Amino acid sequence: MKAMILAAGRGERMRPLTDRLPKPLLEVAGRPLIDYHLGNLHAAGVREVVINLAWLGQRIREFVKDGSRWGLRVHFSDEGREALETAGGIVAAQRWLSSEPFLVVNGDIYCDFEFSRLRLHPGALATLVLVANPTHHPRGDFSLDAAGIVGSAPTRLTFSGIAIYDPTLFAGLASGKRKLLDVLAPEISAGRIMGVRHDGLWHDVGTPERLRDLDRQVRLATASEHEMPYRCPT
Image (cartoon, rainbow, N blue to C red; front, side):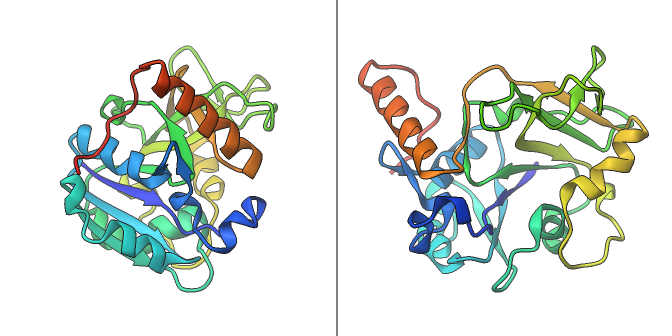
């Protein structure tokens, strides 16, 4: 399976930190967020990854290089000065993602979800990883019924930024800015989007305060010999 890391966002809420660094290079316990993702993708059997770039994208290129440090082959999808949003970025990267289902992860999250668990159910166009609503997003995004079908019922969970997609979900879409919800909404109404709930560790690193809190938690866990996600070889 191939994968894509979404790394093009400007990170306005993270300023001033993101005035000099793109969000995926912000560090947690001394390691950039994207380092965790690349190592965990390799551990899940992924060998080819696309990373989209916009704001300070050259810094990500310089850190990741060809991906060989993680045992990966990495392609970069440069979106120019302004990011194309999630669906637009995926459309722009389709030439690297082939005709098989592919995994996508937001570059600005920290999570212990095992990517190898993701499967695309027969007839479904996506499987989304959903988590309990954090305090900063109490209303959530999508509901999830007992059969694992994603919907819009009032009781909702939050989309983690991790999913597996069938490429036909994006086939024929014109290039340019496009929100993921605009692509998902009609398929959710048709019952073709599935979900899985993750009750483990998940953090949306959306503000400097949340980054500091996460860094503190991870350092404390490391000090107490808590099992950490896969670390890439050096």
